[in-house]
Image (cartoon, rainbow, N blue to C red):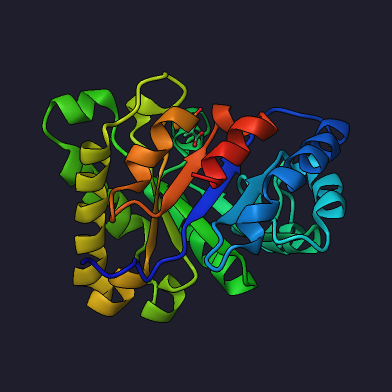
Amino acid sequence: MSSPSPRRPLMAANWKMHKTPAATREFIAQILPLLAANFAAARPCEVVIAPPFPCLPAAAEAAQGTPISLAGQNLHWEVSGAFTGEVSAEMLLATGCQYVIIGHSERRQYFGETDETVNRKLRAALTAGLKPIICVGETLEQREAGRTEAVLRRQFEDGLHGLTTEQLENCVLAYEPVWAIGTGRTATPEIAAAAHHFLRELAGARFGAPAAARLRILYGGSVKPDLIRGLMAQPEIDGGLVGGASLDPQSFAALVNF
Ligand code: PEP
């Protein structure tokens, strides 16, 4: 019999640019009773919600006293300054965030994020005491050219450059193949697990096997309630980073309660 994973499952909702503060309050009020059994379980799935910045105060108020954690969807690496439109790690912490998503493919694709900026953001988040959810993943073109592992290696090594093993303990990795995000096309559990295995090997080579064994790696890319069991049956998959299916309390609760 295989022993249970040492890693606690985590389901993270990435709301992207959806919902208002009122809709945020309504979502949390509706989902809490649907998560009661999970939170009462001996080994509950951790739940993280990443709303848009203006919804964070409403989310913090609605989730107060519950096990729901909040995440920012992005941050700037500087502490403060003339950076119009940006937010700092300190601001996220002050608004109730414990986590922050870094390097999402939409930020890489539309907002010029690179492995270098991912690394700067990662260091800023860790220094401030935020737990980063670091996104990596290949495009369809890269996969079809047989470059998936090379791309993941570059994103992992450059993105996590200079991190200590101690800092890795506070990080979560998300494997999000770009071709599966918002497309309705999901990686099969086997394809996702192979990529997770590869990432864990990279983590082992860089940070040592014990730290790699504790590193949580989420899968993201059109995760839906009917697919979650197959994905979570893979020992390498520790949870999900979910876009579309996290906007509805019923469907996100079904993912948490897999
Ligand atoms: C995401 O945005 O991280 C994501 C995986 O989106 P979706 O679930 O909609 O594909």
